[in-house]
Length: 282
Ligand code: NDP
Image 1 (tube, rainbow, N blue to C red):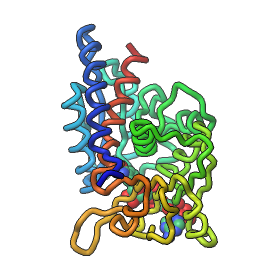
Image 2: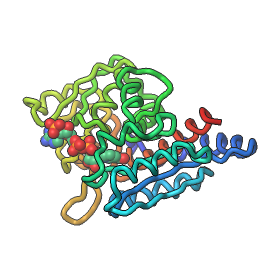
Image 3: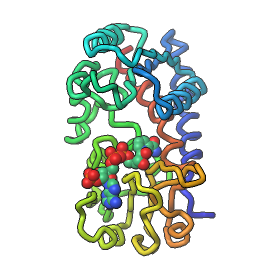
């Protein structure tokens, strides 16, 4: 199909650019290094880490995974983060979330150094995304959406853009990133009255609700750009998005598949942020 926004293609193009940057850093004796910190066992986190380690390795980024016990106290966790903040060999730190209940995200988010916070956990980086200030790190998933738009030359300027979902991980930061590029934004959520009326006005429609195939053909404007951030699994265990791809893709101008869309770009964006952090610190 000619209207596919291919995440793998976007990730590959970005990967080639990043490899050149890493080669230059390595020639100067600098090895960009990411630390991934995980507390306890989670199957979804393990899958994400595996993908991130592989992608960083392909680009030439060193990746250390610190696995900590499920019953680690909040103070012990903070000590680990402080040690990594101070470690000059580590340029980026990614804390896998959610954390166990004894560790409060609202407390520990202040502890990660903003300069190493490559997935936008620290409120300083969050506020930079919200205000449109340069020099921070946006969360990787919304950044991956922006990479896809840029790669395919889709300019959000002045476009009616509707985002379904208002989480701090995807919907809200993405709205601010699109606003910075002059899109006209509507954010929808579970209390939106007449969701279909809102979505069918969109020239760019972004689904980030986590509801399997909820976006149907009659909710999409003919020719719209449709970006599906959702990761869900159907009754047969197959991965699928928030958009009913088979129904919507013939009407959409361009559309991301799941898998092979936004998710395929996220770990490469993480690598990009590690390299940026490394350059700022070296
Ligand atoms: P959350 O559950 O935190 O947020 C979902 C948002 O969608 C909420 O704002 C919720 O509204 C809204 N929503 C849920 N159902 C509906 C509905 N029926 N109508 C309108 N709005 C609805 O999810 P996340 O933001 O963390 O993730 C969203 C999706 O993106 C998930 O499928 C997740 O797996 C995927 N994801 C993909 C990533 C990738 O790399 N591709 C990375 C991160 C997430 P309300 O606020 O009112 O509850």
